Amino acid sequence: MWTRRLFLKSGAVALFTWGAGPQFLARAAQASAGRRKVLVTIFQRGAMDGLMAVPPVEGLGAFRPRLAMSAARSAGEEALLDLGVGFGLHPAFEPLVPFWQEKRLGIVHAVGSPDPTRSHFDAQDYMETGTPGRKGTPDGWLNRAVGLLGHEGSPFRAVALTPALPRSLYGEEPAIAVTDLARFRVSPAAPQAANGFEALYRETTQQVLRDTAGETFQAMQMLTPETIARYRPADGADYPKTPLGQAMRQIALLIKSDVGLEIAFAESAGWDTHVQQGTVNGTFARQAKDLAQSIHAFWTDLGMRQDDVLLTTMTEFGRTVRENGSGGTDHGHGSCLFVLGNRIDGGKVHGDFPGLSQGALFEGRDLPVTTDFRSVFCELAGGHLGVRDDAKLFPGWTGKRLPLLRA
Image (cartoon, rainbow, N blue to C red; front, side):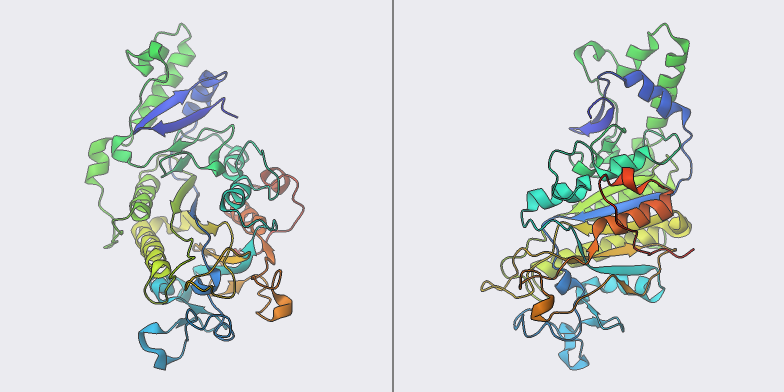
């Protein structure tokens, strides 16, 4: 699992070559960078309340006397944004409404993992490895997707804008984790490389290895600190000054710089809303506003590159249908996710929403999972990136893709 990995530690990239490093250098350098299709994923850690994000316009008030919001105009600033399909959108997500109206944004409801765990750690692990209920899976589904792309890739093929490599990018394929591209540089992975990691390969007697090593380092130098400092978002895109906002800004930079990015990962923390969840104000609203503004700025910034990009959110599970005694919601089961792209069958709530009758609830308390998250991710990886082997992308799964993309 750890034989080939390119990742960032303390602001510097280290290339570990336990067993097959030179092969990685050759394979990476042979690939041209340039314009690629890109899948962008945002993990909402803490379990987003899908019924607060995208509630049915009727029926939730009986379960949430303090948290349920109305779509009626008389509700004033507390009003939900009526999507016109039997669901509302929390007002903090208002920056996403234009994409919904343009039919670029779709929602999948009652989605999640079939495993019933309410452990954040286990549920996140299952979603990132893509093997619900199975512990010990050595690689993540995004890393497997990289291996199934069917063509060589640049060193920037898979990038996480996170302090550490996420579980979904563990595996055989090279991946980078970096929080600040301005500090992106190469550092030695071993004491013997103290005089310069590039020099280590320059000294090799194999001409081909010298050439590929040089090309690889040239690729890494595509993004100089000066280039990054000069970057200005397009069309007035205004990113929040938050970790998520800055991560999305840097993903846009990578895409528009044509360094060969194909899979990008970012994360948004703070969705565990047990206490004082709030309605138009509060913990949930703050997180939702940051997510919506970050996505809006990112999509605006892409401009003509929007056709190349597809974005999806994910979260480990949802929240209880009923509010708790602390003005919040507890760990539940099904939630919802957003998908954004020019080929998305947008302006729709996809999946099978079962309603909120007592008989429809999972264990009498939660929104059930009627759409396996793998159905969504297979559709996106397959339709956008061209990944064809669903059984290798998600081992042991025999389900079907959820149609989300227009031809």
